[in-house]
Amino acid sequence: MRRGTGTTVVEHGLLVDGTGRPPVTDGTVVVTDGRIRFAGAAAAAPPVPSDATRIDARGCTILPGLVEAHFHATYFDVEKLEDLDIKYPVEYVTLLAAVNCRLALECGYTAARSGGCLFNCDVWLKKAIENDLIPGPRLCASGREICSAGGLMDWNPDFRRIGMEGLVFCINGVEEARKAVRSLVKDGVEWVKTYPTGDAAWPDVNDHHTLCMTFEEMHAVVGTAHNHKLKVTGHCRATAGIKNALKAGYDCIEHATFMDDECLDLLLERNVPVVPGLQFELASVRRGPEFGLSQRVIDGHQETLDGGAESCRRILAAGGRLGMGGDYGFAWNPHGDYAKELTFFVREVGIDPLVVLTCATRTGAEIMGRGDDLGTLEEGKLADLLVVDGDVPADITLLEDRGNLRVVMQGGIVKAGRLAGGAAAASCQTA
Picture 1 (tube, one colour):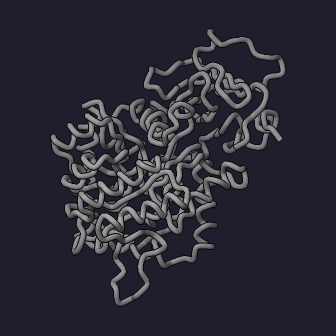
Picture 2: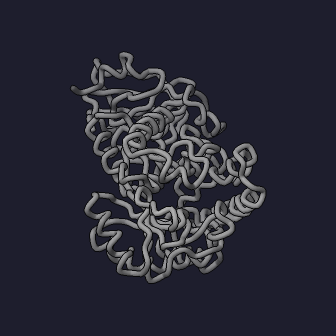
Picture 3: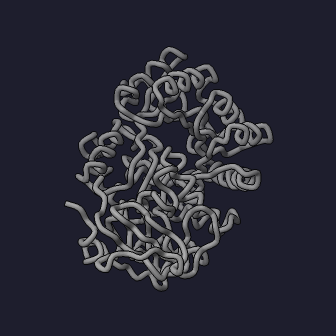
């Protein structure tokens, strides 16, 4: 991905650097050749060349680019489980995914980790973004997901004879688990996504307390993936599924909904991050009737929402790590609503805004494996940052409206926001 050249100064804003430190009221960020040279109080800023580009952030918050840590670029307007595999051909899915990537960047998400995708599109989306063919977040790619036959993601009955080849590998036993991972190795993914447990969306067969993979299958996935330097995550709601994932060596847990003391101890012992995805549950409860979700399903989502929120409070209180990512791409939880997850954690879960912003920046970058390069505004890191109208720690909802984004900068280049394409953007781009 191209980086800016020359020097850009973002000044006079409220600086939230993503580390968790208190905001700096008169903050300055100096960017040189696409990387941060300085971030801190204006009084301590170094001298800059006379021809440096200056961006006035007065009345705004300067913060790191946000990280969507559970990104489904290939999901679009999903109303039923069947929509995930047979609704659109791969050609159209690819185009939809490119649109979603652009939208994520325009919403201030300069990086994202995939939570699984259709047709292994993510690897190629990442390549297109990195080669500046399409705009989008810096992407950490996943691929087709892994689930045991008859599990949550294997909903097409055998009489249809159409399988689930666009979305998942349906496995039976450890050898098929290893084979699925080896296929993903060849496709070039970075994360292997699995489905150890069910979900409230399928209460009759695989509800949110049901196990959908055996420990042996999960352990085989991890061993094979780690051998090839891939990381493993899993959709884990049931308590036993969380424990199995942590004991098997998973690198991240998606949701971690129903945690007990043993789960928490295992999580902290290995310092495994969690991506709760609670906005999806909230949207399912509030908008479910509008889209024909049964009351039984909605009640299950409410149970999941309550249990997940309590688990998150416990994780953070104990010193654990959360990333922010909300399972967007469903009709009732569409792409573009990414920052609603942050609002939910502040207003409904009761987490301090600065903690939530740290989860959405630094921890997200750490989950991607890019904590050395992204996630905070510190010297030497890539200049992925936002300038947002207003005081974001005082009103987290400001991030929900992309009209409030004055600047979305990626590698020192203004890619989106109201200043995109103006003098500030043009002057710091490289050919």
